[in-house]
Amino acid sequence: MSEYHQKVPESFLLFGVSGRVGDAAARAVSKQAPKAKLRLASTKPEKAEKLKKKWPNAEVVVANYEDLPSLDAAFKDIEAIFIITQFGLDEKLAMTNVVTAAKRSANKLLVMIRFTAIFPEFSLNRLPKSLQGSEHGPAFISQPIGKAIMDESLLPVIYLNAGATFIENYKDHAKPIREAGKMIWPSRRVPFILVEDIGEIIANIILSGDVRHFGAFHTMNNGQDRLDLFEAAEIISQVIGKKIEVVASKEAYFKVYTSFMGEAMANRLWEFFQYEKDHEVIWALNDFAERTLGRKPKTLKAWVEENKELFVSGNSQVEGGLVANLKRS
Image 1 (cartoon, helix red, strand yellow):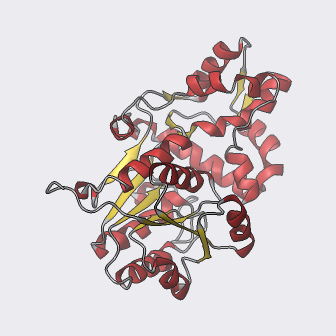
Image 2 (tube, one colour):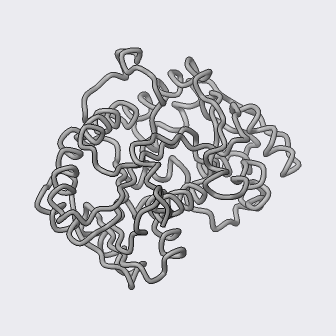
């Protein structure tokens, strides 16, 4: 063991495994460390029952970030923790409880991964008033509040930030592409990354034992795609051999998506996407994902090639995109 490495964790607590990122992380950890103790935490009893069926060899517990006793029980005898939060959580209370439970867990904690989805190093004071909120707000507002609490704790925390759109979100565009040859969505230039690659990155970092990551804020993207909607549509068009029309107007967006997510959520997303567009120069591609994976991350083009039938006939096993997950949450 070198001066930069500690004992590799043998017991893991993962939150959010009912969601895409948490599920990918759990699968990657269990694949790389099949003999490790796996404890999966869900905030809802009904989701916990589903997790028990899907993960028969894992321990499943009900734990809530806003309920300290449940966290105390979940953290017991755990060496590695994966934290991911959802829209609307009181990050101040939640991360205060996480820190308290971690410090009371008999000093067994070796590493904690905190997943975020925020603009790196950008002042929240520059947000338009319509997007400003409290610790109960969207991730890009609330998660910096939680991060400040984590930073002050001096716990062995590593931040993995999704500075990219998820490639799998493009499943949402498959049906309108098949039926009308259209993509209806706001256009802004952002980096891309595959959720499956994020899961593998989480596992690689948490199993590395490398203490040099403690306190680091790693922004993840695939290092290759930084595209707006028109460029993404051109890539899909080339793969499926069908010209795709991009409709990026506010009117078309609201006509299609308000019925899925409600007017308030649709409006907030539109405002955030406009905010991203106004500040898209902030995003920079990097090689963190490639270095951590030991290979090139998957590109949008490669993913579309693998799931071509999704855009042509509708046949695919890929999980739902952003809209589908918003409907489930």
